[in-house]
Image 1 (cartoon, rainbow, N blue to C red):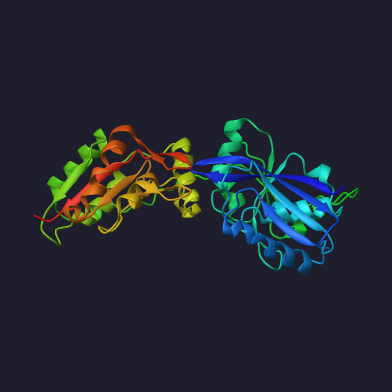
Image 2 (image 1 turned 180 degrees about the vertical axis):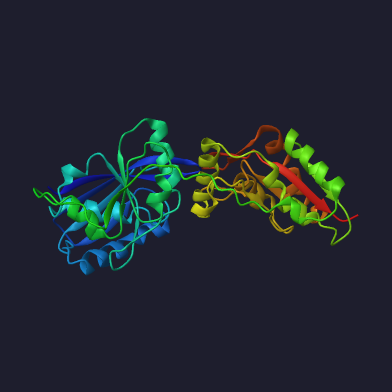
Length: 354
């Protein structure tokens, strides 16, 4: 069969939209064409996929006209997450793997030139999108990304270390036992960590400590005013430890945003984030933006603390941009071609000198 379909997902804001990777092999002048509003790093997949297939001992159809379509065509696609589905689509279209057995799976992963699978950002957002849609598809992801996606309850996630580990599972008319490179990752959320800096480390400052406790209990913003070296930053960095423990749903929301920005770490699971951007940060850096839109510091601080040290030094536009998110708990980023919403429910802590 010269046509194959492989399922994957693209990231647009915090949403992980379904993408169908269609691969067609035809006679004609040999070429490799990739269409479907792909960004530069997606188009570079042509060279990564070609080298990975050759170095793995698999056949790359050099004498065919290869057309890869990422549908829907009007959805932007970025990053190297489509390397693995494109490679599997070529193998299925050329008959090296059973294309029918690929149904019911979703694939994402960046390929090295040797065929090793590298982690991708946004794996947790992909798993949450599957859960929200009520789909029962199984996900095949690289190491690290698979453990991240498995944090979602009842997720069906398989970890693959190498392209050949995936190919062995879908060989035509052949049963293959799972090996060390292909493992089902159990969907068991990790126990929330409890490793905040302790407020007891700060000696004195009884009035400031009581103010922080009142702000934590009531969900209030707070401004610390004092001379340099009086302990304002030390107190603010310990403010998150006064907040109640995160629920599993809050931890998933916070981790999904961190994953989208490529900053998720398993040892930070269940810990409320404290974001402290430098005072030269722009309004876009704080609220998010870009094309496609990316979350800003206020979204990375979701369910946590946004600490702005040297508050008067921040640009006026950046401070004014915090008004709406402080009231609504979310930020809507509108651009000419795309509109995205990010959650931004944080507690604001400012510090300044007299």
